[in-house]
Image (cartoon, rainbow, N blue to C red; front, side):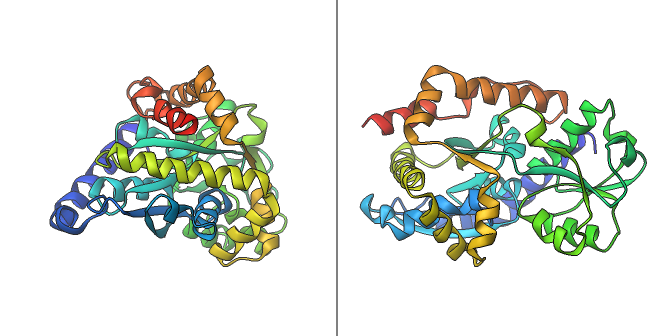
Length: 327
């Protein structure tokens, strides 16, 4: 689907949501209570580990906050919920970073660097070229979509060379395992589920092979006040440092929250590079984080998900992140 069509579709979804939920958002929606935090996440180690730590370690309570968490299939749906007022905060992968870059939300903290995204194919299909003309499922606007487009670009192909089919992650899993699609742009841990039924599936492209860095992030709704953002960033920083100092315990807490085995959570965490808050703040101060976001923005412009690449300071609250870290 062309980038302009993606933007029009997403805009229509946002408009419909606001119309149907406006009354609720104004009266009882997220952000109305300064002491309550409505936080969305994706059901993986990246999305859940800091939230699990914050709850277990009583970090919300230390900031005078109560957190209510809700699981989502992907980042774009959380951005939609932020816009409607159903969430204060959410978690997104790198493939959804174009949404805050387009003004739909604010990045309040970078979480990790992830290498969990792949283009996979049925047994016997060993290259992107082999996918030409074939059915490829992908959750649009996610990191699965991102790696698919990167891989197509690297192979000298476009989405017009494949039959791209938009579907949510769970449908990608069921469609691939049943043979209804030939390939997919998808991510771990969903790929682990697929491998159980299609053990000889092929990984034909990976974020590991690009040489680039792909940040995941926590995002806030545009109407959330800075005072609340300050407290939430503090919680995320404290949880992040606990995760860096206690990697095994962090995996166990994430597994408990996700209702998966420790082995599954360990496999999921193997695709993630965590950084201490000192490192994240230093990369923000040096401009390294802005350069990473700017490079992602260049890709989104080429992919027609963004019309222009904004300055990262327009949507990444890096100054606030550093201020909270130094306070």
